[in-house]
Length: 186
Image (cartoon, rainbow, N blue to C red; front, side, top):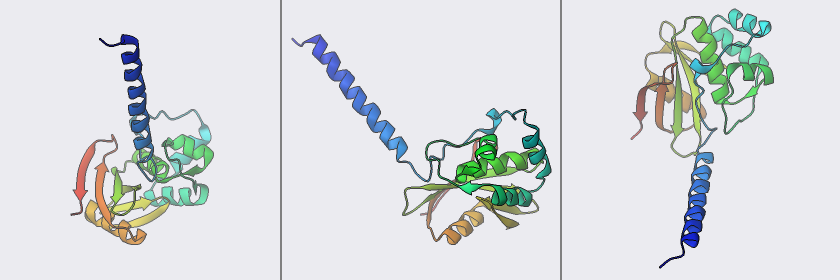
């Protein structure tokens, strides 16, 4: 015979440990959380200056220049800011910059993708945005790279070369945050 009350308490304590362990594992996932912001859920606020600003940034190069002039890097490890939040606080990380650039360029008709890169020797991941111009161009934070790439893999390899990192995996997401492609570095 067992004491039902003691048995239930053990179950609750064990469940608390499991929940704590899962929470810790989620928090250790990297560069920032890389919780990708679903831009389809973003509603443009009724802010005339914000609307005017996004309407004036017509190309990926202009978007990147705006980010370079107005935003600074600050890691937000467990959230991704929406484009308006980044516009207001002016500090963000790779996810925040990517969400902003992807949103603004889409408003001007650019087909775009977000790529999440996992690195071989690091626990963090990184986010960049790819734009379809004549070929592919991309942005890494506020840096704009000309449309001279033919594949997503070329961009991942070039970005990693600049960072002096070896990539382990990359995942390409479309604007709706559907996985379009994944690549693995064996």
